[in-house]
Image 1 (cartoon, one colour):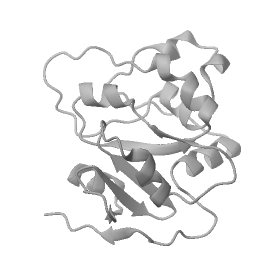
Image 2: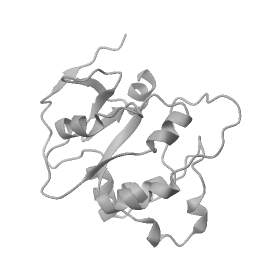
Image 3: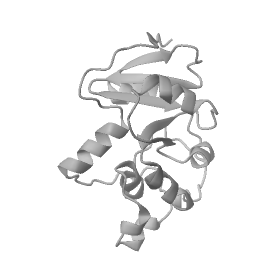
Length: 175
């Protein structure tokens, strides 16, 4: 949790009624980042508390697949909101490269395939089969986004037109 707070530069919050070991929020306007324990089953309930209601269907999805994050030894995974079709079309491609030795990474970053899912792009739009390679821990791939893609990226992270009220959030003191 400390590594995430330090890296994002945001303020950590506990979600009312939820143990911070299961889920917490980083508020770094305009972003509202929701992190959950990989196998925490209450992530949808918590997401509905944190993200404002929309007039269209969204899925709440783990940026790095739940089982993959657990396999790689991560305590928390970023949860985003994306179109259901994009979420479900990527499931079969979510696999990690086999690990050699012990995982010393505290943080991981999105690769190109994960970013495609994040902005609502399905795997059928891929022209490059190399994007279907297993997730490589420590990979940090650069990629530019169009204005529309940036809007989708921001929506996934909880960016809204108006500042979000803290609502069910309480400042989290890290010890």
